[in-house]
Length: 258
Length: 188
Length: 188
Image (cartoon, rainbow over all chains, first blue to last red; front, side, top):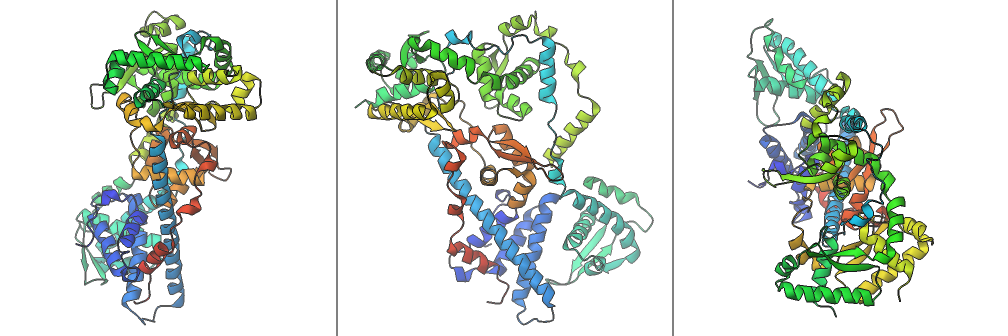
């Protein structure tokens, strides 16, 4: 096993990818995309509990990596259209830029830690006021009634506005995984057996494809579908093995995405 | 050239929040309390000879640095005009948390306020409104704080039971919802 | 013979719980902040020349007494408690992003890290290293965060200007090349 790494160490997809690439860095010209992709996917595999927020980022990057790897495996494979190819390079460059940024802050963090360690050798004086000055200091309880105190507690306990905005970029994905589940629970029993490509045929956005993929995985986890793949990069075959059409009790599967 | 031991005494007394007994200093520096006393006397003399604005005194059985009594007018001005106003709102909130949630650790107070409360807690302690009441029996044995008798006296209360009941101030449904949402976001 | 002003500075710093700004000292002593800075520099030099076990430092915009770093082993034996738990690698990285990108929203931090940073940001806030500094004027009015005074104190910095420039950490050409090579789509 070339990469003995534990997922818990890796906070995010960039972290993991950086590690995989830089640990290959013995000789720049021996860096192997293939092994990086394998390591990355192995690590994904090992994450038994995939948080949806995290999974989306990981999968987006995995998708780019796999595309890059496919390209490399198939030299002169020229029936792809130019737009797609340019898009792949653009994604690759974005990924590179983000990796560089991630590495920059990692090194900056190491320096902050060094500074904190140095500064930590010198301890501040915190003794504060000597008793004889305490009566001089303005008293925070001057003129304060028990009711004022209770009001102060309410102020302290009242949650500051929770910055919900931050989750907005994730929220629509959750919603659409649920939607996708609902659609698939209707679509799949009718189709019986189908392919992933077929299921995502009319979805153009990468995100939509991933959302459908997550929904299929969810159904698989619940034992509602069987997934079969004919070799690496073969078509994903999906077969419905759940209750017959019309029996919708299993829609509760969607609850976890509420 | 000052000796390592002398310098170590200065360093320890500089960060100590309470007078430090010569026994403890002796233990830390592996020397007799007698020797500690001799070194401390030397230091006190040196500060006086150098005309420093601080003194090294023996008080309550231990040694500590203090501002020079000559300079009390400046210190008083500092106390009056210095940091007080900025602290008061935060101090009152912190005091309310300790009053209603005692016994409570500094970390718990910080978590409730959402900001580090160490400095404010220290001020309240120096003021005598908050005091150590116990240790958390769990791992880490955090110091737990509660309010003092002085606190009750200043508020004109006989006991903590006379604090306005918390139930009257239970946050309304919209606040509860916001809280829950916040918690859920945290659990993700 | 030390001047009254110099001695007053020593006395005030001896009772202060936070770094004291030269502006405040100047106001209390009726002199310009520049003059205060000159006197503090003299004091710091005198302590060093006398080989004292403490230092006078400028940190987070003000002056304060600290133990001499040389004597950390003794001081650490004394102050077992109150040493803040160390930050995780994730927390440090997040802190670095906030330090260099402030004011910055949680969403921006999450985007740079590639993972949701809400929980880590909350930890940093409770620890007092990061605080709300503004609201994004744009739609959504996201809360913007920056580093706190405590952050400067813990790093021993006078101000954010003393942070090493981020450019120093941009990976060198070898790393760039390795990354590029690693992600090259062309056949080898």
